Image (tube, rainbow, N blue to C red; front, side, top):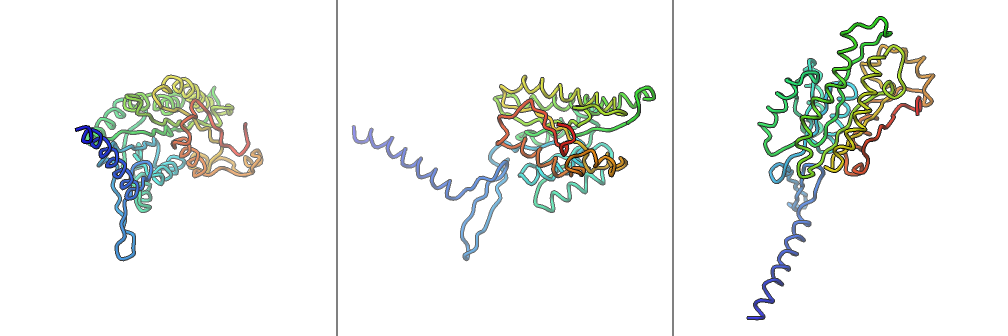
Length: 300
């Protein structure tokens, strides 16, 4: 009887050890959402992709204003990391479809999500519909990228130009971030919130009082929210790009502006996307409440 009592836990331990060893031999983890298992068949490796939502909750990334420019580059980069990406757009469906196609051609996954970030009703409706279809999944990475410019000197600025810029950047951040936090925070599930601010919000630029105000407020909100949600394993950071080659800067006097930039050129959307990818990664889990400038040395 004593021998049996001793052998049962020993056999259990050996069995558990062998199962773990076998699992490690057959399954190679690919972050963040896939497992790859393989076997030898006719001296060739055959791979199966087992999507993580078959076993666990699938983690998605949502990028607002994701159809063009910096947002598009961010979507493509996050998809290359393994995230299924939700590409938000408001009106330019063709550009959003093009971004989705590029991701899928590279072997990634993407879905389109149409809503106006300024509208709480549209935000709630879009997220509710998505959650109904993805009951076991959640959005782990949120990139608040949507923004518009309506440049003018302040004494000539219309009410509409003031409010539209503030609403898109600041209220857009508020509506969507508040809505998604309820799924990031429970049980310390965690998440990454990355806000795309601007050199204009750090330094202030003449002719952009509305844009500077919106982006500076976004920076303040980033620092405050980071302290609120850090105990729940959610990080909140901001990126402040300088002059980046996008539709928003195509009408600026590039040649004269490049003379002000120590590196001597405009940045590329892919360079901003690379920084977003780092902040979304596990390697950045101890970074929160930061504002990282990416401006070629124009303002540091």
